[in-house]
Amino acid sequence: METKNSGSSLSKALNMLNHVCTSPVPLRFAELVELSELPKATAHRQLNTLLEHGLVRFDEHKQAYYPGYGLLALAHRTWANLDIRDVAAAPMRELWSSTQETIHLAVLDGAEVIYIDKLESPKSLRLYSAVGKKGPVYCTGVGKAMLAFLPDDKQQAVIEHQAFFRHTEHTLTTPDALKANLAQIREQGISLDLEEHEMGIKCAAAPIFNSRHEAVAAISVTAPAFRTSDEVYEAMKNQVKDAANTISKRLGACD
Image 1 (tube, one colour):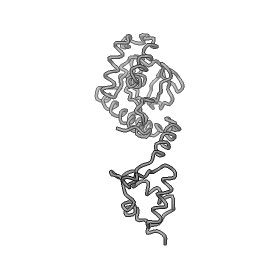
Image 2 (cartoon, rainbow, N blue to C red; image 1 turned 60 degrees about the horizontal axis):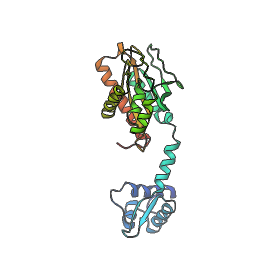
Image 3 (cartoon, one colour; image 1 turned 90 degrees about the vertical axis):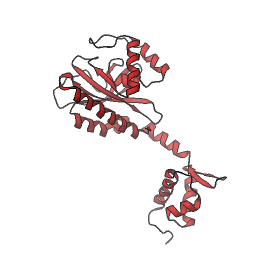
Image 4 (tube, helix red, strand yellow; image 1 turned 180 degrees about the vertical axis):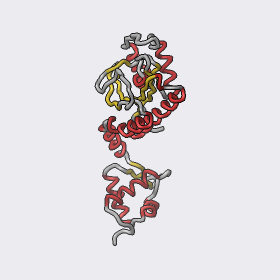
């Protein structure tokens, strides 16, 4: 037997990589041999393979191993290729199951919102939204959720392109009013549409972040006002924030 533990060469290398990446301090060769329970020759071979692929790096001065920069390249390519609809599918379904209300997933398209996924409420409800349909940023929960977390220059550019048409008596119709609302959203992490886009419809939305802490999408739960007591609305806000946090973590965002 060449090794003290079973498993393929790949599993041994991955186990070694896991030790390097999860250790709170850089590990020396002897420490990795002890942790992996591999013979020295096998451990050395696995580490050389990881070094060749840039997945670990070796500090000659400290004689210790660190996570390699190749991991960042792999992570970047992985996140770039993720379809946010696939990543968000399970959390959306869970949010729909717990609220029994309509769930939206949206992204920014220039100065507008575009809905890229939707789960219809099993209860009676007619909404403006549809997958592939665009909507205003300044008076929708998902729009404001993303807008609030844009860099100042990009946020200002989007605001300058808003029509500020008064859809209802509750619509925010000036840049100053919108900016004040965005500051609250940024502080609280939750965006509310209190009958601003459609009368009788309330919405709670939260931003979804990627690994660079960019707000790349937003998720919302939407319900008629007559079904949304203060207690129910408070629960909806917490549930949508939890869903957004789950999706963000799957995209590599940190707390």
